[in-house]
Image (tube, rainbow, N blue to C red; front, side, top):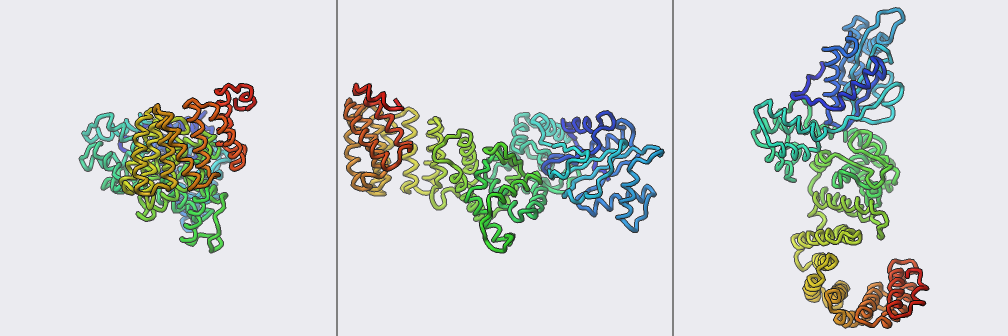
Length: 607
C-alpha cells in the first residue's frame, strides 16, 4: 500500500534532486537513502517518486513496484515474502526463504528478459535491520530507502545518502496558502509567513497547523498565539484528526526516535543530553557547554537515577561519552552535530526543543535550567579572546532566559545573567549591555524584591553601563540611589557598598567633577584598606582609580608616582601578566608622559 499524495502536495527542490540522481542516464545511482529528521516529508517524497514512476513512467516503465513500511526487520522479511508469493516465486510457509528467493529474482538473469523494478523501504529504524536484505544492484532496478538515521552503514556499496531538509520559506508559505485555499480559506501572506517561521518550516508541522486552522475555524494569528503560550504543549496545537493519513502527531514522532536513541551506546545519555540542549539556542550550542563539568554531572545523575550506568554505580560520565551521546542524537536526526564548528556544534529544530520541554515536570524544568546556566558559566572564559565563542554564549543565555527565566532567579539571580551584561559591555556593545541590565533589573525586582542583594547588584551594573553608553550624569545619579539602598540594606562596610562608592566616584568625575572623584576615592581607599586589607584586588582597584583621577584633576606627577607604587604591588599580588597589572603599566606610561617625563615613559613597552 503506497501512501497517497498529501493534499496540496508541495513540489520542492528535493523531489527534483531525487529524480536527477536516481534517473541520471536511466541507470546511474540506483540505491538512494533519503535521510532527515522526523517530519521533513521523506515518506511523501518517496511516495511521490514511486507513484510518478508507476503511473507515468520514469525512463522505462516499471514492471514491479514494492513498497514496504520497514520499521523492523520482520516487516522487511514479511514484505519481501509477500512479494515473492504474489509473483509466484516462493511459498508463504517460510518467510525467510521466500524473502531470499525474491531478492535473488531481482538480480539480473543472463539471457532473461529484463524486469524493471523499484523497491521502496520506508522508515527504516535500524540499519542492522537491512543486513542481508538490501535489494541487489541492478541496471534494471532501483532501491529507495527513507530513514531518520544517518549511520555510515547506510552509505557505501553503491548507495547514496540524500539529506531531506525543511521547506524553504517560499515553499512553506505556498503550501499553507494552497492547503487553506482548498477549503475556501484565505489568510494574509504576512501572517502565513510568520506562522511558517514559528513552525521552523517543518512540513509535518505545517500540515498539522493547516488542518487545525481548517477544523477549528481560527485564523493564523490565533494559532500563533496558541504556539507562543508556554503553557500550551505541542499536543494542544494538533488537529483533532491528523491530515494525509498521518499516523502520529509531531511530539510522538520524535518521542519514538528519542526512545531508540536512549537505548543506543552510551545507553541512557541521549535523553538527558537532548533535554539540556532543548533549553539552549537552536541555531548553535558550543560543544564545550554540553561537555562541561555541570553537563557531565547532569548526565551522571540521570544515569544513576534511571539505572543506565554501565557499572551500576554513579561513576562520573567522561567527556567522550557526552560527545558520543551527541553523535547518537545526530545519527537519529534529532540534532545536527558538526564538531568542525565547535562554537555552533549542536543545532536542533525549535519544535524538537518544544516537544522535549513539554515532557518535563516543573521541578525538572527548573533543575535543567540551572544546570544549563551552570554549563554556560563553566564554558565562559574569564577573558574573552574568542569573540565568536562569546557571541554564541550570549545567544544561548538569551534563549535560556526566554525559556526559563523564572528558574534563573531561584533561589537567587544566576551568575550567567551578570556575565552576559559584562560580556556585552566588554565587547563594545555598551548600549546592548545597558538594555540587558535594564531587563535584568526589572526581572530581579519582580522575582526577588527591590532590596535583594542581587537586585541591588543589577541596578549597580545598569548604572555603570548607562554611563558607558554616554550618560555620565544619569549614571552618577542612579549610583547615588543604589549606594543609599546598599548602605540601608547591607551596611556601610559591605564589599558591595564599597563597590558602589567606587563606581559613584568615577562617574562623578566623568560627569565633570574630577576633584569630587579624588576626594571620594581617597576616603574610600582608607575604608577598603581597613575592611578588606591593603592587598585585596578591590583595594588595588581603588588605588588605580584614585591615581587616574588625580591625573585628570591636574596632578600628573602625583598620578605617576601613585601608579609606580601600585604597579609594584599588583605585580607582587596578581603577577606580571595579569590584565590589571598590564593596565597599570599602560596608565603609568601615560601619566609619566603627561608629567613631562617622556624618556621614562618611552621605556615602557606599552607606551
